[in-house]
Image (cartoon, rainbow, N blue to C red; front, side):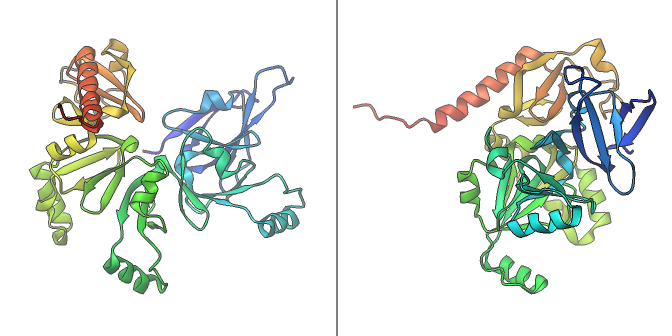
Length: 352
């Protein structure tokens, strides 16, 4: 089902705009600079921009996460394929094509679906001032941390295959970065160790493959009927080797050969009920609350079984999940899991 954002235009019309066509939003002033802000919504193709009565802050949501790129411009995070620094030649070409002053532009934001790129006035260093959001993949290009599905470590055989397939010298590449919604992995000259040193919280999910901890919503056993279904669709996949299904923040999933109990230790995860495990670091304790009547609204549409006894709503860094455990039990399990990690990381001093 296509997701939309409902806006109220300055003409008073209610308009549903598909999230998939939004290139960017820009803050525009109301009737006076001191009055409420409005938003200019620029879409793909020939669609005319829409000016909404709501501000950008009003329109952004968990389904429409936005990234500020400078100059009052916000780009939907899920549409960002990569960000590249601009060269003087890039700025000159844009200036000649658009007949504008391009000296303020520092980055090009490449979008999915063939949408026209957006030009940003913030440098990549400025975008990362509050912590690593854009991860370097080589040649100055960066991808958004929250868009990473997984990272695959490359060995010599993999580099040889890639080089032959693409007709390039792949000897310098150390990893493949797989983005959500993108079937063309990006090649990185940085190794797993170097990416971790940059601040990317990578967790091994099976030999040679890593997930970003903050992008994992939960994981559970890969059920026998799911294995059978996979085997029917892809006979060559050897479905029986997969033991765990990892669900990401956008509800897409990927499979792992590691058992759930192995990943529970690796992720320092909490069992939130019905054999679903959530990384303890992803649980926001201030947003763990008792399940209420208001939480029941939209429960079925969100994929939850109505007949189950939900007792708490767990706020995560990447969304929300329900649990049959109480809010207090979830908080205790989170604290215990994180305390264990801290204890294991603390050097032990031998008694004399």
